[in-house]
Image (cartoon, rainbow, N blue to C red; front, side, top):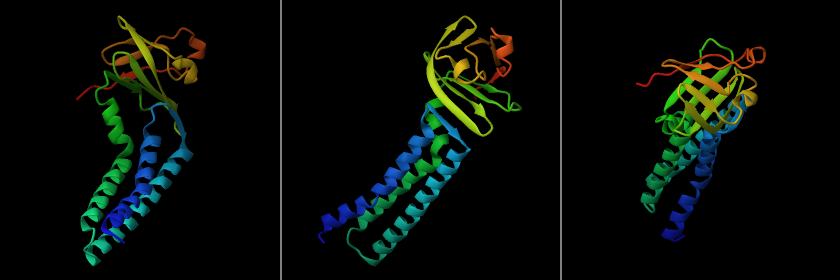
Length: 199
């Protein structure tokens, strides 16, 4: 086998790992998705499969690099590419959410002693991200918003989408988002949100 063909073959072996890493990153970081406890187990399974692939791949490449001198540079580069892709996949939510939410205007969530999950992020001057759910499931979506004085109006009917966990309108204070309860009987689940202070 010629050297160029061997180099191509080495890089082709990285494709399954790169595709699996990309799938994990995509599934972990969609801003519009729902997930249950079973999805968490699915994520763990994919990470274990990826870990197994990467270990086998690196061991084979190191062994062949030591044993054979040809295409040593290609083998080293393939290991570097695969390691970077795997680190990005394992870093997952923390890395990509920091990029997406790192410059958000406001971040608020339901007090941690509540059973319901509720979070609102104002990503910029037009768009917001909302997360809602319970202990064993959660959903997220994005939409637009407006601010009129100290009133925050969320478009996309978050109250209806979240089964009453989030409100359509909030009064904005220095430390809280207070839901405007237009229908008190049907808004029992809608709680005050605490604004996260920026460091």
